[in-house]
Amino acid sequence: MSGAKIFVLHKKDLIKMGIIVLVALALIITALVILIPRQTADAEISRFIPGVYSSTIVLYDEPLHVRVTVSENEILSVYMTDMADLQRVFYPLFEPRMQDLAEEILRYQSAHITPQTDYPVTTWILHEAVRSALQMAETE
Image (cartoon, rainbow, N blue to C red):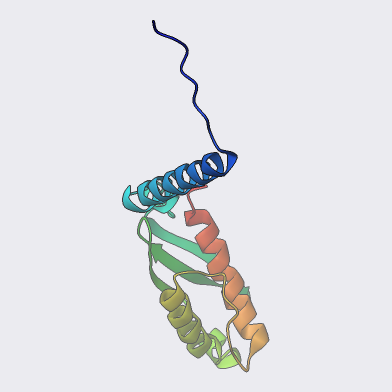
């Protein structure tokens, strides 16, 4: 004769088993998250459209071009072109400030910096020109 089998489950044992199962699941999920490589948005999407982009500053009715050269994910160079002699005489700080600003931008690979300078107005004018050129290069 086969009768009904009765199992006696203790509440204490059920709680222990539940905790062990939860800990095991948490460890498995953590291992999967750590071990499975994820594709990041930076790897899929380029920051810039490669090329040379320029922004113009007008000083004494003469254009002064600030140019930024970029690759897909990197700022390669930042420089000024077409500076006239009259501009060099009246704005002697533009060239050295541009060199300092270019070094910082290349170091941090971003125009979203706060340049450290004793000449904030000159640096701000150049910084805005660089940011304008980089906005043209962005892939958004």
